[in-house]
Length: 291
Ligand code: SF4
Image 1 (tube, rainbow, N blue to C red):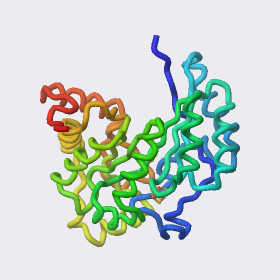
Image 2: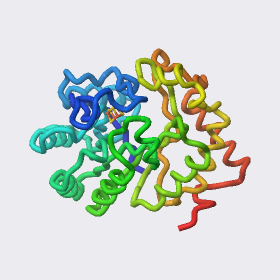
Image 3: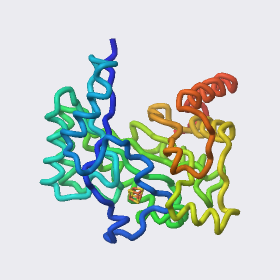
Image 4: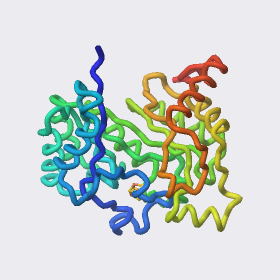
């Protein structure tokens, strides 16, 4: 039987260089980090405490499963290497944790850190997840990412060259992007040594600069209905290299933070609708991919 893995989210007290002034202030315009921090993961708790609570939550239902510590909130490589080592190794010392997934910005990794992670990856499953968000520099400026696409390409290549698995995050539906540009992202990302991709539909979240922009400049924003987004995501998938695993198609901000679009669909309902639409279109990942 295939081993089952569950990710446990860790909030390790990092901040973000796009918030504290090293790269910029205010952060990316769509970001409200509260939107993706589960309740059990508070930065006042140690890594071990968070893993204990996370694993306890799942253990009864799936006693045999193993875990990945998911350093998810903010920029999880934004600290001196000695501190990063302490945190990562505390997670790897936890029973049944067999690897790390580390979410970060592409401008926040150096060779010393990547060499260290490459070393770890000979004994553990190590994945670095980069927020790429768009492959278009105009968009990246508009959303105040604080880095360009070339920076993402460079970080992805340097990481993958060391044998570390790399996942990219991309948002579909950012203001200023039309359908053609969104599909071009699939072609550009296909040329990179990615092992996985997480797609997110654009969501307007309370307390973000983007929510304010949407009020001031509504003509720039086009939020998808669930069915329109599903068709776009399938168009995207058809152009994506088959070896890149699409780990997610959709994200869900907590209801109390979400302004729009509110599709009223649970994740499994979305997935079911997506599967049916793929079957109806008789298509598959990579159908329109040209190396
Ligand atoms: S999305 Fe990530 S990089 Fe951007 S401000 Fe939020 S934590 Fe920082």
